[in-house]
Length: 408
Image (tube, rainbow, N blue to C red):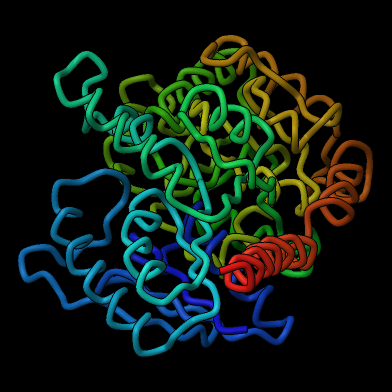
C-alpha cells in the first residue's frame, strides 16, 4: 500500500507530534507498506523515511513550534507541494496530521480518490489559545472555531490518541463522522529501556550536567511552555527544595529554556535545576535514565501526552496532573496532583520520591511502581499494535470506497 502523509510542521524535530508521525510511519513500513511524508522545508531526517519538502521561505529558517503567522506561507507552499506529490505518486491513502494537514490534504483526496485519514492530535483553536496566538474573547475566535469544526468533517475517518479526544470531537467540536478510532500514543520499549546507562556512565553524565552525585533526580522532557506546565513545575520545585535539599530537577526541552532558567533564578532554585535545551530524540533515553522520578505537568485538555509512555518504558515512577488522558496511560500506577495546582504537584513529587527508594548507585528500575509501569507500556502501548490499528482504518476506508464505486 502507498501511503502519503502530510505533516504541517518542521518534521523531524524531537518532540510530541513529530515522534508520533515518525513512529507511525516506521510501524507501517515494517509491515511492508510504502510511506512518504510531505512537510515544511526545514527539519531533520528520520530513519531513512522518504521526505519531500516545500520550497524554502527566505525570511524564516528556524524550526516552527506551535502557532505562528509564518505558517500561513508555509501552509500555502505545503498545499501546492502536497497536490503535486499526490498527483505524481497516486497514493492509496492520504494520512493527514494536524488540522492544517487535513485541510491541505482534502484537495488531493478529491483529485486522486484516495481516502483521507485525519490524525487528530489536539484542538486547533485550543492550541492557538495556548500559544497566545488567538484570544478566546476576540473577533477571530468564532471563525477559527467554525473552520476547525468544518475540517473535522472533511476526512473519511479520524484517528485520535485518547478516549477523551474522541469524546471532545463529538460533543464539543462538531464532528459528525462516525469513523473515529482511538490509536493511543505508544513507545518503543527496546529504545526506551532502563538499562541504557551503566552505573559509571550514569555518574559521568550527572557530573557533566552539574547534578550532585547523591541527589535524587526529577526528570521532565518536552516543550517548555506555560500550557505544558513548566511554570507550575518550577513553583513546585521551589516548594520541594525548601523541604529537602537532596533533589535536583533535570528539565529537558525547548523553546524558551533561557526564560525558564531566569525564572528558576528568580525563585532561588538555580542550584537545584539543570536546563539542557533541546535534546535529540536519539539521546532521550540516556538523559531520562538519570531520573528517579519523572513528571508530566501538561495542562492541555485536548492533546495527547506521549512523553508519559517514554517515562513508563524507562521504569520511572511518574507524577502527572489528574486528567483523563493521564489516567488512560498511567491508570492506578500514576502519582497524581490536582490539575493546575503547583503546591499539590510538589506534594505528589515528594510522595513519589519517597515511594521507590534510591541508593548511591541510582534507582532500581526493576522494583515497585517503575517495573509495573514498564510492563504496562510493553503490554498495551507498542507501535506494532498502533500500526495494526491504523492499517485496519485504512482497509475499512478503502473497502467503503470500493463499495461506493461498485454501487455507482
